[in-house]
Image (cartoon, rainbow, N blue to C red; front, side, top):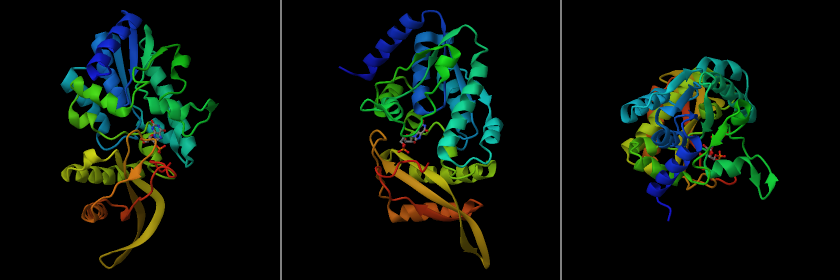
Length: 318
Ligand code: XMP
């Protein structure tokens, strides 16, 4: 029978056998999947697991620092923390096509990660928190190789670096990984965080990405997410986030006309991200969040709510 406890024990045994006293490197994005993978593999390998966290500058408010802190405070695990945000922004300058963004982020990520990882010459393995839906969405459908959306976490890295891949969650769904994480003692607030895509806020700032637009989105997103916690509805939702649209609209503030950005709110229920239904908020909740955002985030003068489900829409806007 599948239980988190059995899975943890078996994986620790297998990994110990496979890796022996060699070293493994973990690409730690800070998301739930790679975090659980890191804690699990740390149990098997101890100091022979090297965790590298690349800050792309495309994370949510305070996210990178929170991740580093969580590992240090709860597990006494030190991360190699690389701030590459300027490089990512530079490479993304002027790029608006979603798949191009993903490609640039994927390649830049590999480049930065490779450079760091090479400092650990004797490493032979690479750990990734890939889930079953990632495997099927990006590889093949009924024997035909089609890419629905390229998922940047998987591509290219192990072969280039001559590393053998360890993907403990390749056959698991998100909720199973969450159970494992709780069993391992990762704080619930961290484990229950909504999934966050590899390319991060780059696919939520529609159109061109700038530091300024990222900061506007970060502030608005933070208000939205805090309100979900405040009302006790965060856990009913699979994913909730804000999207900054490449559209300006007219507004009025006091007796002055404004011409500023439109922000969309997205919230869906789902069990695996493959299909999703838009979340029916109480109108008063939407009103509260809209007022707070427009009042306190400079650069936004209009908030809309996305009422599309997947399919035919996707969860992300890009
Ligand atoms: P969509 O937008 O395709 O999203 O309905 C399904 C799930 O996948 C996440 N997603 C990504 N995750 N790299 C990732 O690691 C990506 O490029 C990517 N695109 C979408 C999305 O957040 C949702 O959970």
